[in-house]
Length: 263
Length: 271
Image (cartoon, each protein chain N blue to C red):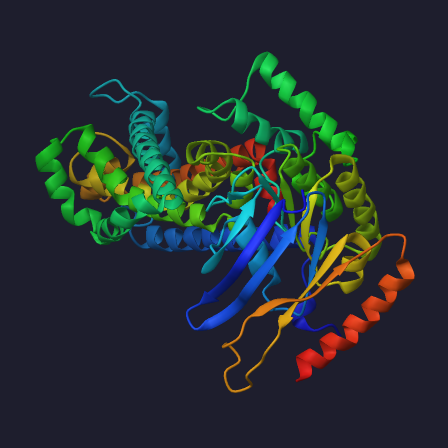
């Protein structure tokens, strides 16, 4: 299962502006890929390609040998930094919505025993993310961290093949962010998820990922900065047991990125 | 000494300050009325408060000598019924069209220019057309309100629908929702409180068209009465009617706000 997800020669450009160029790689099932890089380096664009809200200009993305759908679908879950949960539904309803969509095609709403069943599943997920006591609360009554927990539960209820996280903890306080890291790692291990996470925090990328990608430009033409796009310049397998090694890598990348961005 | 821009009145002071202008207006009125009455006892332009009170008494508390009806209440009932019907139909049209066009780009493409064009037609200019097509009965008056108000509601709802965060719609798609389900469970419930907002904003316009229609062709209604008694310069009736219309407008607005707060608490705490 080394080729769970395959990227073949992915490029993305908007008009003359090349954002991503010639990305080819494979991702194994159960990998936790963290995407780091300077702002505007194309890591979020890449996530949107995976999500299906944007299409690659050329190249192909396959999951289990099949081309991905050209619009967002339930095989790819997403948690954004903001607006991931629905303000008009309480926590339990937010999680149950995914089940209701699936089991009630006409109305997207379940009643009676079926509803009870959906609520049970939703409650189990709320418990998994530590929101059992807040099931009746609406998003505006939840803190930022709790909203992101809810967004995770909401996405995971669909059992997506891949989970995409777009700077999910960027707006949280450092202390809460640490709790969220533990939660994400726990969920990742328990559910054998394949995760892609965009972050601007290099340390967070090292701490969470099983594989770290650095996005940057291989070539740069100072007279035509849009001519070349980014690609994965570093692809580092991370090992939880080898923290010192990881730390050295971190320092190495920090200095490398500095060199790349100044030349 | 604190800067003026940093000084705000305490709550009791604020309430007192907010009442003062009203008291001043009433006082000015009474003094002017007294001055005119001193000159000419028959003056009709600024009736005294006792005259106004007896006019209210005549209109609201005694049956009319001609028809045996309480004219004030009958006028109120007719006008409110037209207003509610007109605004409800306009809100319904606004919700359906605005939501469909806001959520589905293929529907927005042909509708948006049309809505813009329709909203630029001055409704009063086609009032004669309405009278010709729908007759002089209730229907033409209600249609005037519908025509006057619905373009605004349609455009407002369309815009509010398109303003919903893109992330929410993407999220709903990753939860497996199809277009219909997403409209029904994600977009519609979030648009309803915004529809109440739009209705509140359009009530002033709705009153304008209602009174215009009643002034031109009607046999009852608050607007009809005002324009009827104008012929006799009955300021003692016109003034309380205007105050009553203002009060009704204020009350409807307030009730809609309370309703919205009660049904959609999440919407009001978001802001």
